[in-house]
Amino acid sequence: MKKYLAEAVGTMVLVLMGCGVAVSLNCSSDCSTVANAASVIGTAFAFGLAVVAMAYTIGGISGCHINPAITLGCLLTGRISGKDAAGYICAQIVGAFIGSAILFALTSNVAGLDGTGANDLQKGVTWLGGLIAEIVFTCVFVLVVLGATSKTNGATNNFAGLAIGLSLVLVHLVCIRYTGTSVNPARSLAPAIFQQGTALTNLWIFIVGPFVGAALAAGIWKTVEPKK
Image (cartoon, rainbow, N blue to C red; front, side, top):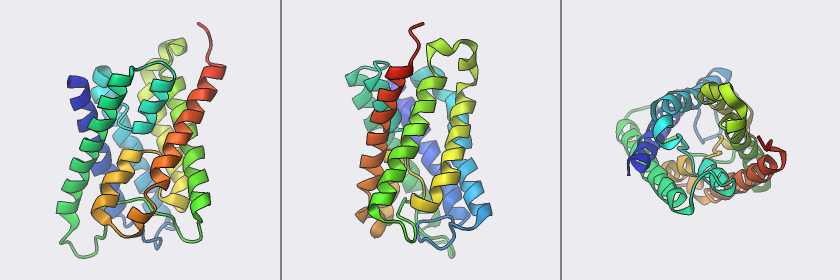
């Protein structure tokens, strides 16, 4: 239960901090400010720093997945049992809803702040383009997670949290323009429920895409993983 609680807390922090910065900097799903470099960079670093902070806080307890896509990747590579994978994902969803609820309570009556940082397709991006983006960038992100935390990496494991956080920054810098960047079904589900509208209509993209990307990453890692 401590592992599940840690995952819930970690995901809550990720959603509250990452989506909170997105809302505060107006890097939201309305497509109007995604070309604003300052808001994009600030949001990207918010998600990355949240992951780094939680990696060094709860990494020793649960491994700090705080993302159902990462949990699926670990399941498919034999690093976690099916029972724990189910428990992790449930805990992550609960944590995401708590983080979104707090953010919604903070912003719902504040002038100039709109939404809960939900993902949505940006201007000119089709559902297929968005789906491809989520598959590809989740694949890259989960592949970094699997590689950085591999026992074959030796001493570099000490810096896994930093590598994973920085890779999430990089993924956001590229992908925000297309989908707002999910690569995390829990991070997308809870904000969309609170925000409604097209964020809810397109939610399936941010669930299917990351899971497919995670499965691809697991297959790639199993192919290239050293034996020792």
